[in-house]
Length: 393
Image 1 (cartoon, rainbow, N blue to C red):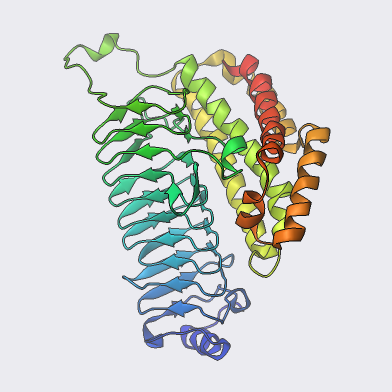
Image 2: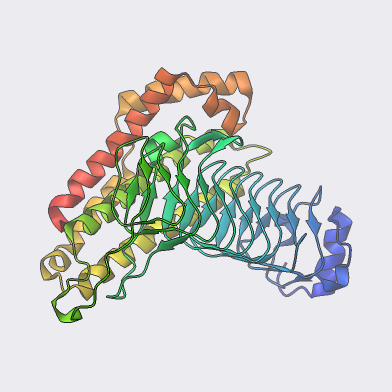
């Protein structure tokens, strides 16, 4: 309902069964559609402010248990806990948890049971199921996967930074911590990033890697099962005029691979996530997931173009329309049809066994079945990257 006043909205939510210990402290702004807020099990603690016509809050969600919460155009799934902070244009799938002092902005997706502790900043960040971030972290512009469950998950230690802004003032710095084709199968070794450290984006890490506490990582590590420690920069004090700051082929290639992985994730959301639409994963939540991923893809395109402008890459800018055309074709592609059909048939049989529950169905896949799905998605990643590299690298 448009232009509803706070009191009217509060009364309607109380009538639906929403729990509000101090309803006079809860502000539901006039553009929030009350029909998109569930009643059963939803708790709005004192100090909650809800705004935005896209906002969706499903059953069992709890907001504000540790401090005031502001939610703006977020898609909040069942059983999600946003304990305190500011949340805008983000998606939280079933069981995701954010501690007090969270600052979560556009393009962010926390999949099932992903969690962040207190005072964490996220923007254009995607965390796959079970991924856990500690406290006092800035982790923008990256995707993190890995792990098989709540007792075996990828984790980032407290006081960690993903460095995503360069001296040349560009943010073409997205980092892949894991990847999409293997990560979505929920069968990979976890990645551990020790506390009081950081990654200098754009960077790629393989599964099973442990980065020791206090380490600043500046190089890709594509070998699995590695222990990385150290990473201190040798002391120096030189004229900045002779130092090349960015503009490397590696940075461009990592951006293209990140975009290719987002293309694969989009295909996964369209072809696989859609199979689980039901009571616990509504059409509206699925729509929000796709829209938010589109924001992420648009952000990466924008930042990559800015990168070429800052670094005065005239050849790449002249071919930008060709790049956009190739990328759009990749986003519309569905991968190898034989692999796609084999995987979706295998998954359909698991859904019949487990019901429309995403994690149990994915984890019920055999290693061979999961490998088919990974090959399907990896094929799209490779085709996308291979079509884009000749244009921009």
